Length: 500
Image (cartoon, rainbow, N blue to C red):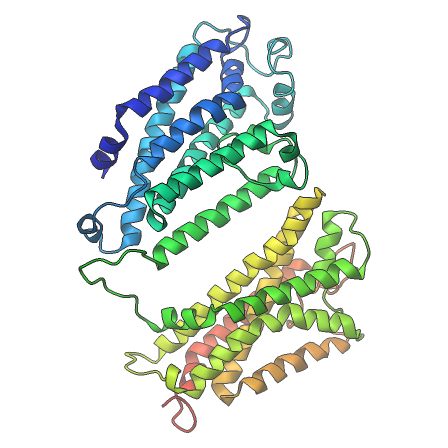
């Protein structure tokens, strides 16, 4: 694989990148009193060097290998996902070699500079004044700043390489090149057009944000947004490569099999996804309209996860809690109901073990739960980033984690009730009755305990500590999972009304 990709890339692109790096490094030595680290940081934060020299070479570098190999080569790996990951690892290796050569040429261009430790204001007095004071506020020393900037650049190379390979698989070579060219033009527009540096266009994440750490430090929300976008893109591209293969081979490939894959295709349909996102957007709209303008990010998070307290009953708060926690379970309940009722499309046959059905249901349920958690995180974070208001990351993590544990506990309880009663309606009614117990002055009751009105916080004056709520929900998960594995699966296959 290394020889094949290197033969397509050739020495020319390596030498071109290193030559430009050496030329830019020498051109930046206008101040003979500068230090080596300040010189390196000056070059690595030169946006014209990256956008007009490094990025075009990198896109040509990765674009040379974006097309898939022949089908016989791919079939040696058994599955396309294995081939794709092996190709990406090889491209990362080649990008790392180019990066090492780039760093070496920059070090070569800085020979003969001074050796001064720490940030010295007089050393960069003739350099880019707006860059080094910002770096000095964030990083304790120039060496740490150089390490972070350099390795962030390497991570950007790897991400652009992944995106190029993904485009080369799902699109034709010409279409993939056009998209890369469009992304590059958008990056140049971000640099040259002032409107792109102001809201709302400044929320766009371009190629420069993946290779230049400095462009993510100008605003407090910029780096988290770039990180979230990168993680979503990586997860989406790897998932699509694992699930799909655009081209059909002449040699038949082994198709994915198993109940979990089948149930996943049944659950993740357009109608269920619209219902899931609709429940999250309704909760967000209620939180936004219920208290007037939002002052800071913490207030927004508290509104969104406020829920309902105990010892009283407020109709709108109760409905908002049901929409936030129970409505996302509706598609999963429909799937469970069809499975346990043994419909023609869901009749379970040729199972080696009874536990296979339970494992498949739990796997697809947890996948649905994690997808819902990611959507909830996006709806919570994106408005805060767009409005550029500060927020408490610890509070956000606590709220998301408790809500996932809370809804997951209700999902496991619903599945256990379904195994015993074979009726989805009874399961939903039981969960609804458990939510109605909020009228009792019992704040530690597990169902709905993720409501911040029940959690001990200065803003909500709740009574339950966060650690106690998390421990209680985790214990509930363990008890329900053990019960499902011991008795629930037996009830599911009971011959007097079960599957068999």
